Length: 225
Image 1 (cartoon, one colour):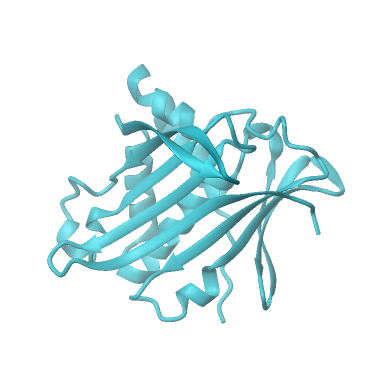
Image 2: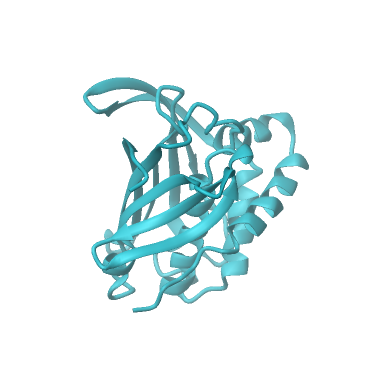
């Protein structure tokens, strides 16, 4: 089974930051919410944030088994200024990346980069092209909606930002259903790490069949074991 390290995430984030800084105030408001600084400041250094990831990708046999599991964010034992993301599965653990804690919760970077790679694998397109369209969407006005979510039996207020990176793309008809990809991130001050859920969905408008779904949902705070 192929294992795919997420090493290019920090590079992709840096490029996206440049695009956002070049945009106007209205556009950067959404970006600043998505890539909020200081979101790990209140998380105990001996704690871990645990997210459940579920992947559905009919065009890639085996993707669900390979990529679904629990993603754990924990502070590095040898350097508390760094955090690590680890995919925990029944067959063993896979380190996804190591990031400075000062920049905030890297789950947002892992989410976008994994969707980019998943789309490139399923639709056969260039990850560089897909990444550039996502970067452009991050620097454009986005759909923002206030709402609520339930975490551990408690109702919390949320802000959800939705991006549609290929809505006006001239190559939509070649994307095997990913042309209507929607990226939704729900955030709240009421949860550790800021992110409540990160969801990507795509479906074929002609057949109404689901082409892709990736869900990351915060399950809570656990220990580092």
